[in-house]
Image (spheres, rainbow, N blue to C red):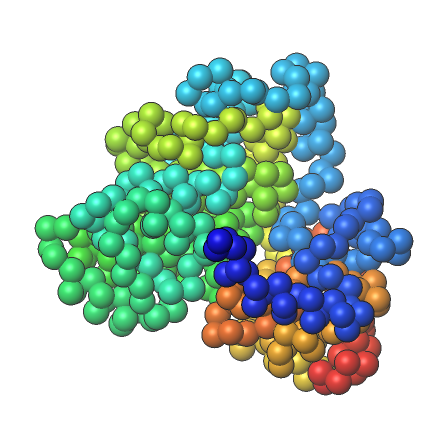
Length: 399
């Protein structure tokens, strides 16, 4: 009889070999207590958090927490139903209103996760006979949305404007086309040339969806993301985002100005057939989104942190994913998985948590230590982080 788990044997063996060396499992860390957006207790010791995507540090904001507590009292612990049945409470409508205000768009639709937002929107609007043209480094949720919708998938080389144009020229002019892009790519923290890509997409009759999960809140004059920063947000048909990054809660969303957008509430399966998020999470999210509208000082400090860390790591001799800081993500390239895991553990012992990212999630088979900065990291903490990287890097022989 065929063992359905046999396809995972290479990964099982790789994990076994890694753990047999005595290394801590880098994919099973437990945070015993979280003290702030930037500090937690891990393995019994105080640890600086540099791998949480908590970009704007909203998880411990007093107003955000208070709104969630009040909604807990007013609406209970959960919804026990889908948004199209009994799962729409006042906070769900309120957070959608906050998103419309934040993006200055006509429509907003909230999903239970950011993954489901991509899965739902992409699979619903592009189906059999349509074409989805996407960057080859797109997030797993984008690829899964493509598969679920049964559209033809056409991939192009990462951030290559010319490659996108060549793909579009080859497609039938009359066919339905959706170009899917990301503002910031989460592995290397690099930014897409959206202005040119959106222009070319529109010239070839394609609709455009941009995932701004890793740019919402701090890129752009109003924190609306890379499309705002590059001046092309009015030409983007759909923006996907998540609450689990800058907003500091959980959930996903899509905003749009398309006049027929609201019909998606009846035809989008990951929206229709999923229980709605708890009202407490929605109330916290709405409060956070509205506070992010006035977060210019925090955005400025986050950029300062990113520039300081990027330069410091480069000066120490680490190989980084980008020549210059482009976002709050800084990827440190490791020689291989084994030494990447050793470096990750050495940092943890220094009291610093980062993400260990490995193939196939990473581009070009790279092993990365992915750092995501927070607006609540102090200047002193960033310098402390550099000191810990230096000690760990020398101990492992990376620098």
